Image 1 (cartoon, helix red, strand yellow):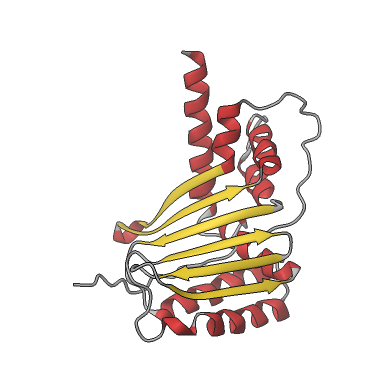
Image 2 (cartoon, helix red, strand yellow; image 1 turned 90 degrees about the vertical axis):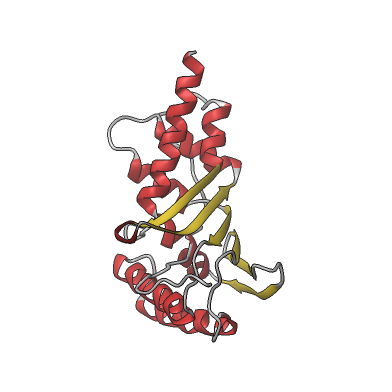
Length: 221
């Protein structure tokens, strides 16, 4: 029997711009710390339902990973600096594995809400959010009427202002692909994971920091 979740908004998207260095920090991060920053795996759970909804794996270029690792060594609250570093990634890959069946209208509605949040936050302007919402609904129209199935996968690649994606069904068939170009396209991808309005930001950054802590503990042994 297929599992179905109602009332779940799945927000997808990522933001890519050119990455920069970290002023005032000259020491190089350890290989383990950079590895923590370069690849994150996070299990997104809808807390009040106690249900695993989505497995998110994000990989970034080595320059971004180094910047993240250096920022994590900073003083005070480092979470915002880490999230901003990922927002500034030049190259990223986002692999999503769905762990529950989700209706197509829920999926598209979740994206619409996410884009509206990004516009309210200033990551996108209102016209860009409206255009992206229409494009997303068109790009994923193939999901209707079956919707997303438990085990389906959506893989994004973001390089500069170019976004590519492939949707792979649980049986291994590629059901849809897309390629879009524009700064607002890449802004709509990483933004849903690392912008302040993101449902994923806190969990992703926490996963990185926990990995750093384990790596530091290992070096002390």
